[in-house]
Image (cartoon, rainbow, N blue to C red; front, side, top):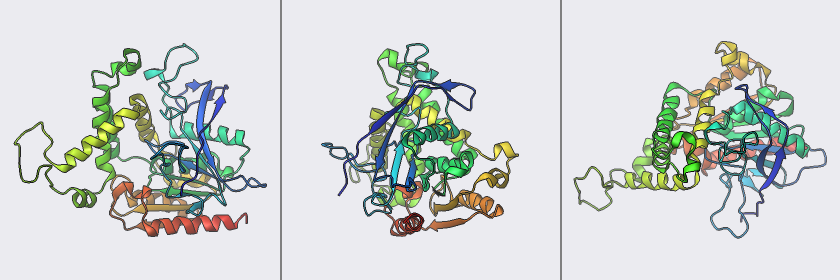
Length: 375
């Protein structure tokens, strides 16, 4: 059974300096918490979200069917991250479209909707904003920071920006930066959006339209990269929608995989903001802690003092095991305490969200170990 989750909001009037040199003020962050902060304030776990997720990590909303948090299988009473022991915090990142200040909100400096004028944000900016929220909650040190994919990049960045505030970092299906192929996928998705006639240079709100065509294509591209070839073949293969009846049409949906991708694209275009998609994929592209060290990841990670668990999945070609092993090597170069597991799972990048027994058991065992530190 899932518990009832309640979104909360904190307003920050003071300006947050951004890596770009710009700043943002009078912003709001949406967040949720699960479990209770202990008397020593030593059991807090921050969960960082990936591209199309939010602060709604676990539980359900009262009176709403099908409102389970995006990592509900991982977090909750008796689950691998047990909210009977840990105080879990999910924060919606700046620029998102799920409650925190983003492109669809009003710019206090102009009185107009931000739209394309919302400042570019980076992983490091998100971490700084998260740190401010934790300050307001009275959490000075995290028992752990946990994230998958883009969330894993934030977890890694936490250990570099605030090393004294993180005891453990759990980085799942992630990478120290994006390779050229990943940046290319992001760029194709962005071009699909910005060339949609309804995009209007990012100010489509004023025109009462949404660039749904571009969003659909962006989501279809992304979704292909999240799945493995094995899963796509097992799920759809070359199945036709109408048995053996070919229409010999270049426009109609013929194959089941086409139907699935169009469904995913249609659904995504109904709830996700186009400017948010551009912002978040660009934040992915920019993340590279080794850049300031001439590309030397070992030097970049020398600042980290946390203990680490890294997890990768054998069929994840978007964030391959090799990328996790780069982080492991750099940490070992610095004699850091690191555990690493490569899970043989068929599900591709999406495996980090699924119920593989070995994966769940591993996370559960690691958090059992963390809990012993404050028991």
